[in-house]
Image (cartoon, helix red, strand yellow):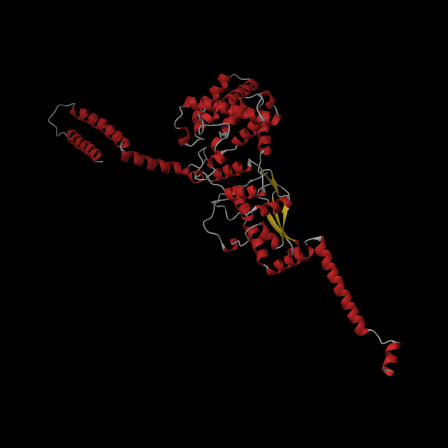
Length: 461
């Protein structure tokens, strides 16, 4: 700090000398003002450079750059946010298992075996494209500055342009060919085992394993199979889709900080809803937003409609990486996946809740025990901040129904007397006995006297 002030004071002193020189106050020759001015300019440049490279100057530069970058809203390929990195199973859910794509995990020894497969896939893509490998690589290298804009600076800072361009060339070609082979079921040509294929497909959906879609578009334009490749991407995504439409019309509203009174929720899980007389039914579509609550004739019973979902080994990584994407700080979204998981987690506490969802054909369990599924959703749903506007009307309708004591009484009545054929038959038997008893009593009281009754009156024993 003192050094900077000293240099600035030197510049100010020289500037005053220049001013006096230009005013004719010097004792030197005719060329001295010009020499002094040039020296002042050189010193000014030197001072400016020194200030910019000083610790304080760098802080000011960082401050100004932060303001300039504030308007940037394009989401970039980046690492999972720090809060999620603290989860116990971080590596299981967020790091690739067999193949690294892009710059974040590039070069790690655990993924070296897959590098040879990537080269073979990339070569197959080049062969099908009708172009030379040098030409396709040259197009990527030519556009490398534009492609770098799709990455967070932190994840590409250690790569020079040539290294990054080659990485994107190989990985981009390999991904497109991998998807094409998967859709066409042609992997027998590469002699790849099914378990490795399954893990590789999961790796393609990880947040830290992404490539810019612009890169894939540029590569598809260079291929003779452009239409087949585009169709293959759509088919591949449909094959691995969690829901048909997570959010087709994203809102620009993030999670609200305060919830209104109508958002109060006292029910805890599926079993409590069932006890209140609420039935579970699968929605007509598998879109995550297709959740609703209905009542027959606005009375009893109530029905909660939920989109059907199959849970397997890929469910956890898919949901967690979609949630991680929604949590990225550089773009706005409506937290659709986060809100869905939070809602589902509010219904699942234990294995019995999963059993009820299975019975209703809402949840298919290919993961293992029902307890494992319950633990999975409890783990995914931990520490999430959903959008309170999504499903708020459903929660309100359920809560109003749940608070109605008449609904609870009717539910208990039907459960006690109609939950099984035997209880139903017992109820009918009791009802029939009651009816017969009432008829017999009425007949005894209101029946007209007979001849025997008159005789008994006149001739008592």
